[in-house]
Length: 362
Image (cartoon, rainbow, N blue to C red; front, side, top):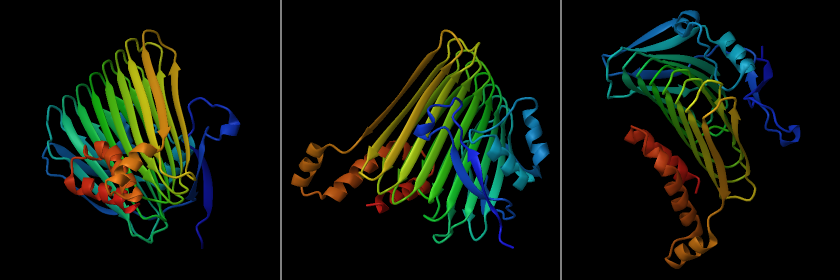
């Protein structure tokens, strides 16, 4: 029997704006039921990080009364957990430092699949994780991943997310984090494949002096579709959030970026910054950007902005006079723009793979 497809209203803005802008939410077509699993491996060379395959309820019990829900919303949340009874849990021991990143690599083959990951970073710990996703070039299936992080006091956690799926596949990655006092979360994302992608981050800065710093590099080409929804909720005093998004758009691709900094009452002294910089290399590409700041607190600082532009014609002319073709000039500018973030990936193999994806568009 053919698996029935349903449509989820997901990735909502925390506060709605004008309906005609068509940015309040997105729709995600998914199978009603998924039975497939992700094929892949976990490389962990650290004795300070334990890995368990556990029932979903047990894995989520570490959050206790602290609600952990990503930015793709309740409809996606309910659908996902209806598909996913188990979780892979990573427990980082307290007072430990893990220099080598845990590398989680999974590939989409013939089946739709979901995967739930839970990271519990113990007090005073430091750890790094890489989540790499690819697929067979001809795959037209769906990969949905949910990552939940509990970051205890004074813990530092770095998450790298790299996506290189085939141009017919669909990719969904939602990320929720709960941060305690003096915790630091660093997120580096590279999104280069899949016909349609939905990316989400929601971090709750519950403790005083908690900090999140996120950087995203993406490239869209052809008729690729990309929806991004990043949310930072400031609860603790003097907490800090920073979102930096760099993108290059070609072809008839379509992208919607939603970034929200939410200052909750009582988070005095907190600061949030969000910035997106988009380079359009096609007149047919469609870009939508919605930077939002919500404020119910006093003595806070919120900064947001977005820039959208093309390559300067004078720069193109100059490069052509030096024997560089227009396409090569565009490639060089795109490389320079995205390489600042790609170079932060703590894996030379993955960074080179990302640069190859960028160059292949030209």
